[in-house]
Image (tube, rainbow, N blue to C red; front, side, top):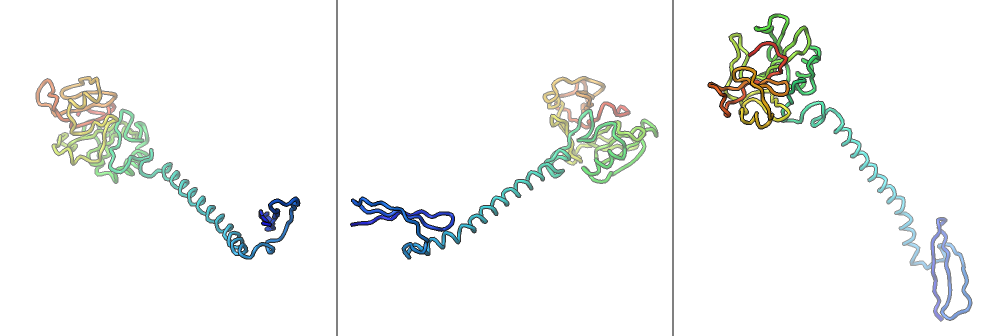
Length: 246
C-alpha cells in the first residue's frame, strides 16, 4: 500500500510531516527533525538556509544605493548649481527687467550688485564716473553691460550693442559679439528688429527719436528715417530709471 508524506518547515528548522496511506483508516501527525528526512533533501535545505541572509543583505544594499542616488539628485537640484534659481543654465541669457538684472534688484548696494554681477559675468571691464550725470553717478561695466550707481545704490543699467566712449555711445554693428548675453522675459535682445519687438511686447510707446518704451524698459533702434522702419535693429536696452537720454 502506497504511503504519502507531506512536510512543512518551521522557523526552528524542524519539520512537521503528515503521513497517511491510500485506503487506510489511520491518519497520524508526527514531528521529526530535519535529520529524519530523506537524505536527498538535506543539501537543498542547507543551501537555501545559507543563501537567505545573503539575499536579504543584497536587497538592503540595493535599497540603500537607490535612496542615496535620490537624495544626491534632489540636493543638486535644490543647490545653487546650473539650472537653479541662483543663476541661469550654461549658455542661457540672463533676464533684463525694469526691476534689475537677473536676481539683482535695483536699489541694492553697489557692493552687493558688483559682487553678484561679477559672479555671473566675471570681473568688471571698466569703472568710471558718468560723463553726462556728474560725480553723483558712477558706472561699472561688464563688456557691453553698464551698471549705474547713484550714491552707491544700483539705480539703473544700459545694455549696448556698441561701447560707451567719452565722445558718446558707439552703436556697434556686430550684434553676435555682444557679451554678456542678456534678454528680456520675452527674449528681446540686442540685434532684434523693431517688428519683432512689437510682436513680443504688444503695445509700445514712442519716447523720442528711434526710442520705444514698454514695461519700464527703453529700446533704442537704428532707424535713420521717420517713421522707424520695422526692420530697424535694437542697439540699446536700458532701464527707464537710468540717468541721461543716450
